[in-house]
Length: 252
Image (tube, helix red, strand yellow):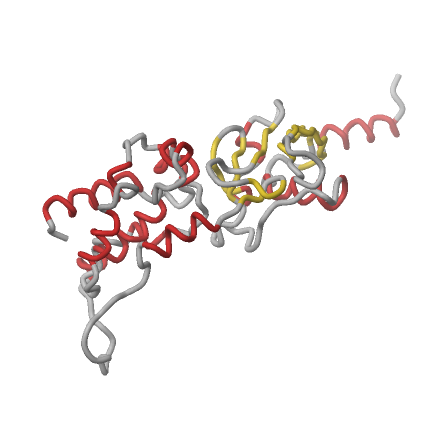
């Protein structure tokens, strides 16, 4: 017959929200080896917490050498994009309970960009493509004495592509980008779209010519990987198609 003390212990264990989840992380340290390896970590954690919380526990309690990027931890900065169970996601927006914690949860760096260490990749090629499409408002003439007005309808035209947080989840999910790092990639095209269709901007033709390059918008194969990967729900493939249409019709 169980004692009252044991009953309380068993009841407390049964009521505990914590589970033990296995995180299988792809590790890479160029100072140690040219090859990457998988390493398992057992983490006791509430499944309602996020993958980022688990990575923090691993780094702070199990292995301080684990390297990854994160900043705001609220899905705004986009710095913690990584492949989780084979899909590009933001670690700060991915709940453990939503990715089947009964099996090992795989975590690795996003594809198509050079891995510097563990989950950190070299983002410079990604940001260079972003800079190349002129992601800023271009106007001519004198500086206005009042703000440039825009109708709600004109603003709605490019509203979707203003949501980009430059996490690279879309670009690094693109098979064309994996095979040819010269392709501008979905994120750059999305940010060009944001200004091409802005009624206040006067450099739409210039951006279209930039994207008319052999490594530009025509490289897209419309696989929809980018749209599926976007953590902000941007219709990336639709934006790319609209840029293609603008190149053909010169209407935007």
